[in-house]
Amino acid sequence: MNPLARSLEELLPKRISSTYWCFILLRTALVVSTVCAAFLIPFFGFVMALIGSLFSILVSVIMPSLCFMKIVGKKATNAQVAQSVVIAAFGVVCGILGTYSSVLNIAKSY
Image (cartoon, helix red, strand yellow):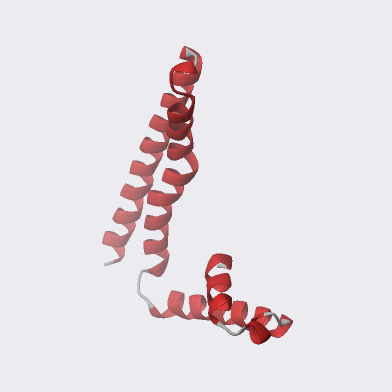
């Protein structure tokens, strides 16, 4: 939420965006709008689970290990390469299982 709130604050005039009340009201409005979306959009929780299983695993597990291998390159030891591959493979398996579970829950609810 913070990057979105900061982006919205940049659109406002400086005299308004620098006040404490703007900070509080803008973030409160964002949270309230998210709660309203959660209540009004069908399958919101399932859709969020699907997005989480796809992108959270990708960003937090798979990409760091692949980036490590890309950055270190030929200097990596065999143990480091093996660990990075195992971590990336584990992330892929968890992402597939999470995605499958989320899609199954969406299909069951529909």
